[in-house]
Length: 549
Image (cartoon, rainbow, N blue to C red; front, side, top):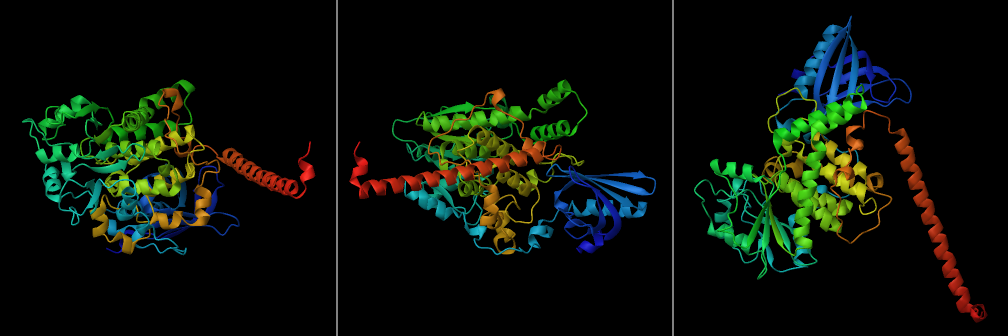
């Protein structure tokens, strides 16, 4: 298919662009296969380059001979284009709708993007499983990397290499996979260096109404327990939902077959409930007209903060079982690709200081989201403004990032990265020139040859000039476990995402710049103090009389 077939009117002059907190711009609107571009001959005006894949929905209005197109984006931005001529307006709107809803992944912009920067570090090779396993090998010899899934036949959503107990052979893994939803047999998610406890993740067991069991599955998860120790199964569904899953062939671990494991049920919502929550939240944040009572009522009705609380509470529980109870943990919901990953990744941020660094967090996203099979392609297909009926869309990854922001806000000196880094990941998960978030699992990315045909987001983000904007100036390495508060009054609305386009950030930007200036000045003074102390010590050494009272 040629993009030109979808572009009815490639260029229109005299288009006026309205954007939040920016001056109105008049210029030429151009449509390409992947971008909506508005450029102006006016001095000091910023051009608009908007990816079609970032467009969630559009609305058309006509005032006389001028047409207005309201463009609502997946990053929650809303812009308006005033286009002279009814035909031109209709043609532009029709083309945008067609170009922003292309189904073929291979037609997406990452396959056509050519970087304008030198790739110093190839992000596709930055976080390979074998490299991560070397760190594990330095701490324990009880685990191995299995290639049982090297051709993606045992589990279509797992990567080719997975960490499993050394005492479990590949035949046992194949049989255990037939007993788990989607073939997602229990694999290592995290090893706690402090006490040797582990966290694993999986899909739900396929016990069904007949109480089916699998000796290989029992052997696999029991192999992670130390002698005389118990483990915890954290099921991210309520007991009622888990019971209902039995009728559809799913289920949960029965205490009779897993006597060394205690099962705990938590309530983390899924799919359409989360998508509806995001839509309500964005609607509340976009409405500038309502009173305080109405705003608080709408915010509460969205249930967004409730979802944040549920996810953080469950992650804290998993971390507590590992660090304080000295017990290993298995986390799963239904498929093991949504709420499971929220819990396992947040628990690691709580427990592991390395995950609070920029590279460590990137590694976490690779391990626990990209390689673990989160369905980015489906979950991030629509944002809060789409008029299409939701299919499998859900802001699962955005909720995870919001939870990380809540912890970052409570521990502002314990994270090497800042809020801008989290916002960057949100934006690129929904629309990007990079191939990192394309596809829904490692098999998809291998089939699409993403490492060969696209550029990794990490290749761009890890350049020194970009890291400068993503680094937290308050960061001081903290080797301790950090326990976030999940009290309702401790959880705030993430203004950096949800109010970003609704009010000017000028004052916040100025305050941030002043903070950076103060920190830099403090470092200068500290260096002067250290230099003077060294000079004084040298003088005391050279002239013993200075030491006399």
